[in-house]
Length: 280
Image (cartoon, rainbow, N blue to C red):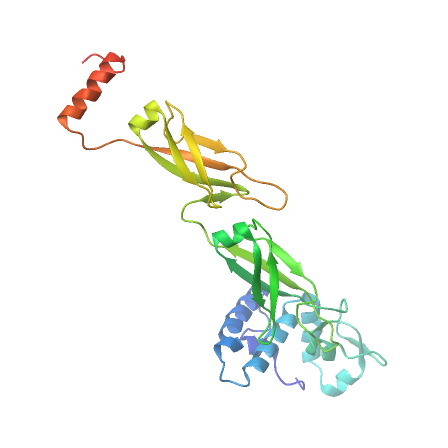
């Protein structure tokens, strides 16, 4: 092509590559070529932008079709102007020129960008704000919704790529939440395991449990509680701007492995009197 760089060659894929192959090649190349990994290379930013531009074109069916047709033409042929994929006439702008500047000539709008924000379990519960790096030169502050779930995607308008026209696309941010070592989350509900002895399960007991928000909750474990039984604490789960989930306490029962002869006899006698032991 007269325009210089061949975008298929740049991404290291053949011109018959599938969309999935193009996407994988772009991700691999973008990670390796990101300017943050090459702080001492003055050309890193320009190479990274070129890689993004290549993906911008080849990842879209319409843009790729126009690009493929234009690759086969000479510069003189492209001077006649475009009226559709592979068709040219006088008086209209060259679509390849528009494509090379990163614009979507099929819709007249610029593409969007995506980013991920990783949060700890506690940060997700409480919300607040965090910083997102939009580019090597731009960082924005982003509001984290209270109780945000992993996988939630939000749209930040006007913070995506800037193209030759001066217009900017949007930025889509996906939240990824680290799991908790104590709590398991299902929607707005939380689950926790509390261990009691077999005697405590038989007779009943109480426990002090610290909630995900640091509150101490006194929990009554009723007499006769069975292994795996769940106790529901309403309103003690994840709190969002619209609702509160519940906390489920799953009771795990342990059986003592080492009792003295005297302890065994005492338990056996109590069980016999209560009619809990069958005849030998």
